Length: 219
Image 1 (cartoon, rainbow, N blue to C red):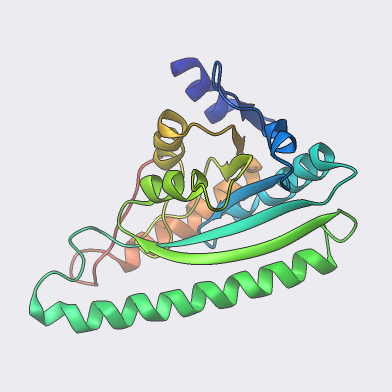
Image 2 (cartoon, rainbow, N blue to C red):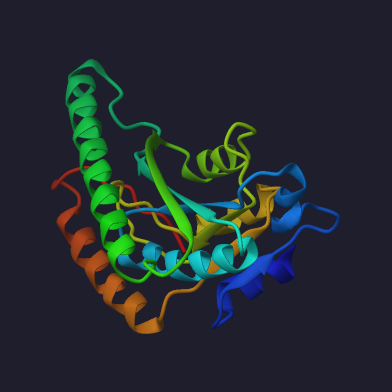
């Protein structure tokens, strides 16, 4: 509800939101399955702020068994992007390029995590990339997939703007209102948010009218 929305936006510590009468992260033990969390990323350091807290939580809840994190990188684009014959081929090429960049990003990120901050945790790491013009709905659908069976969904309250890097904020609110899973929300450090906001303004200037197409979300 509105209280949960305010808390997730303003709390200085990570918040785990549970539905009244809904499932708990530990319910997966009853199904003899691994405790898996879906962590959504947009390629920014702000979105990555959710990784370590989510990893610590999953490892602790899964102990002594192995926990699992799956990173979902969504390549977002406006619903109207690429409409018209003149834009169609170019749009496909740009989206394909962004998909390849996203896959390379996830591969590099997982290697860094395995050798760095997550090295001592009993976790398996996997990742996937998808494209969507509706990022929030895609997150909810992916997290509630019966095939993957996630125990919880984790994301940051802030991310990057621009159609290449979707903004988390309004997305977090929509996911909070829609998902049936426990939602683990992490607010990045203020210093990191200010730095990313400065970069966002620079990007917005580059995407001013006449300089190309952009998609800016609202926090």
